[in-house]
Image 1 (spheres, protein in one colour):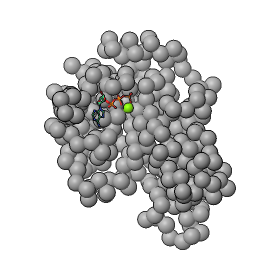
Image 2: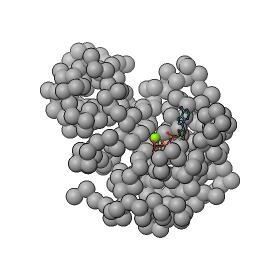
Image 3: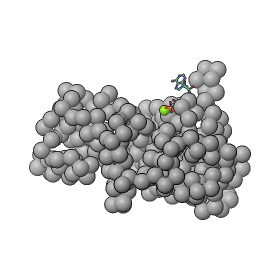
Length: 281
Ligand SMILES: Nc1ncnc2c1ncn2[C@@H]1O[C@H](COP(=O)(O)OP(=O)(O)OP(=O)(O)O)[C@@H](O)[C@H]1O
Ligand SMILES: [Mg+2]
């Protein structure tokens, strides 16, 4: 059974439906109930129930192969669940249609691990960002201002808009991928291991940026997937711990880290040097 912490904002539901911590659909950007998903004979998600509240940064952690990306892709409509109910930004996406996926694109943005594969090498950064802004664009002048604004938000110089992806470092490309996701103006950003391909020092830069965006009161929610519990502690409000396709623990990140209720979470924390008291300074 899933362990829960008092005062949690990520509610493990299912048998807990209606318990304290259950929020109405309007507050939730993700509401998953008893999800099951298999690839052939391989049962990957097992009875997964999670809530992500609007405005929160929620970490999804667990060892490699535990099903984190599979769950993330179901949430953004790239994987189809076999059983259960899945609502994302208020839409039932249990069986997403093509039209629905198209509609959700502007409301839910997926940022993958490798920004090189997700940025078009033939387009300048400015062109890529302009596409993301498309429906908001009024005039060329307005577009330039928007591009400058979003580049500044991710701490890149607006003059870089005329450059191509290969002219940037891995950390800069990942910031550009974040900028593109922000430019769309989504309600939810699903960030899947966006720092794990980067050198440690560059990881810290991207993490600082995410922490900084959070401090400035970003208006999107985020599901932040990571192997690294120390990173999760800095970036996230709440945490979901997965193991072998199941949710084993959920709750506010500080409460879970201070006093993990589940043995597996304890083992995970013990195996990460510096996970307790990790700081960016
Ligand atoms: N498209 C697919 N077809 C078949 N099996 C898949 C597919 N995607 C994932 N799997 C399998 O599902 C399991 C969970 O994979 P998933 O990528 O969700 O794990 P993860 O927690 O994201 O791992 P990591 O931390 O390494 O990214 C793995 O055993 C994986 O091999
Ligand atoms: Mg993964």
